[in-house]
Length: 221
Image 1 (cartoon, rainbow, N blue to C red):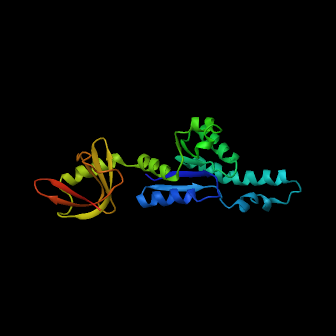
Image 2 (tube, rainbow, N blue to C red):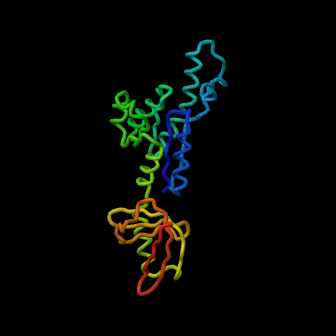
Image 3 (cartoon, rainbow, N blue to C red):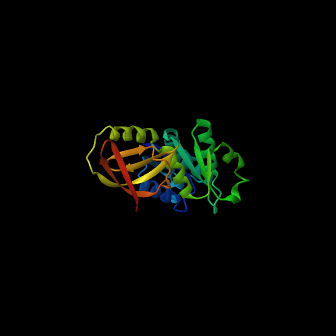
């Protein structure tokens, strides 16, 4: 399953790129969507429908045109990340949070501690609050992890399918006493290795060997 994540809010820093890049490095099955992040283009979205003498009506038309995109993508997403920046007051981000809450869409807020009081209702409906994009990446890594798939794949390997002496590199995950390895060609492997000092997200080199049954050897890299 590929998760659809909607990135909403502040458009003046590269927090979106940090999240996209972080999830890409981990190989997460995630697809990202966002509103138009070009400020001038967003403000002028309704200009094609005719000029307006008053700023209110120009903004009114552009807001409606922008809503065609934002409402559609919000409705399709599995989870939203809503960013409140330091420089501007993102009223539209607060609106997006309320819209997600009305739709029953889970969302993560991303903002500094200085906005905790001002956003208490928004955070109250959120399922997570992060202060850094890297924390959002960690939450998404946990949420989209295919733990059940890892267990099934490892059981299949233990039954003897695969090549003797297969080697590769993977990414470690740990859950409920089981250690899993995600590998591009072998898929997901997991087994009851215990934690054994291996940390979640630690990159390892591994080899598979068949004796009486499959075994796995890990080495940190």
